[in-house]
Amino acid sequence: MKKATLIACACALVMGAQAVSAQEVAQEITYQEDPSQGVLLNRFKDNWFVTAEGGANVWLSSKAVHRDLADRFMPAASLYIGKWFSPVFGGRVGVNYLGLKGLATGPNFDGTYGETYGQYYKTKFREVGPVFDLMINLTNWWCGYKPNRIYNATLYVGAGAYFSYDKKMEWGGKWTCAHHELFSLRAGLINSFNVSKQVQLSLDLRFSGLDGIQNSSSMHWSKKFASVQGYLGVTYLFKKRDWTAPVVPICPEPENCDALRARLAAADARIADLEQQLKDCLNRPVETVVENNGPLATVYYPIGVSRLSRENQRVVKAIAYVMAQNPDKKYVVTGWADNYTGSDNVNIRLRKNRAAGVEKLLLKNGVKENQLEVTTNNGNLSDLGEKCVALDRAVTIEEK
Image 1 (tube, rainbow, N blue to C red):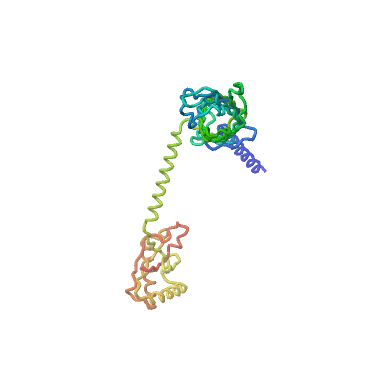
Image 2: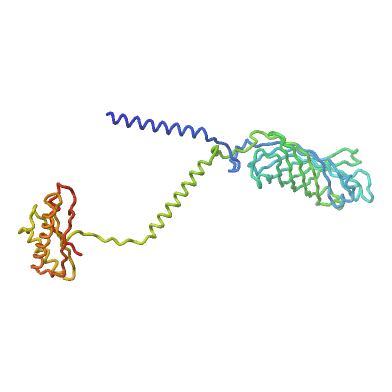
């Protein structure tokens, strides 16, 4: 019971330490949005804006170009509402007003008001109509979305339809609907500058191509003409204005990494050393191991005895049969005696007599004399101590 209690307490301490360590790590790691990892699409009600702009327009028809450039400038204005569907793609719809000054070949042309300009009559029109544009934020496309970027370049293409207003002398000089429409294709570049999170100032440079028949006096009218405009605008951004980015963990940098670098270098060195040791070991030649099978036979004697017993005689005869079958092999017959009992002279005699008795019986049973080498050893055969002296009173027969 006590052992189980101790184990439970130890487990609780380890788990508690791990929980504290995990809590410390969790406190060090912070999380924040990273626009470089991409953006997530917002809801439909987000990222709307409204833009108002005013500027100037220059008519570029085939006859208008004969009029002084400074005398061709007319005001232009626009009002839009739009939405960004992503940091790159958006759209807007609105109303555009264009003033057009040009020249006509006859006074009966719509928009003429009696003033002549060389061989031409001066004309003036006011065009108002709905327009729409598809927008591409080039800065976010090429450089990636950054919520705090000050400047953005936006390319757009679009179309519109204009209702023309002009004035004639016979109408009392009043502006009246001319009852004809113009259709337009347009493209431009918006250079916008963020002055706050809500407000942008912009310079909008636009080229518009227009096509339309003004009236029955079409012989004096160029069906296709162009217009170049420049606008200064202000845009208000409705909430939500930015784009949500994926949240990534931010791990704090250690104050000093020298110790970690040193440990890493030491680990790399240790790994390299172990790899070299393994390589050397694999390339090392295989050593031939000579197995020592021990004596062919060991004959044991009682204390002080050198004569073979009947049992030992049967053992030696069996050994002699094996040796006689291998006449090319040599054998060593060694006499032993323990050094714990008897005098040295007695033990020397016992060793010689024991070896000689085994040799005699081997020769008698078919072993050749040249196969045998008879010797004695003054040490202990087993050398296991005085209690094992019986193992030291013996004769060993070993293959040479």
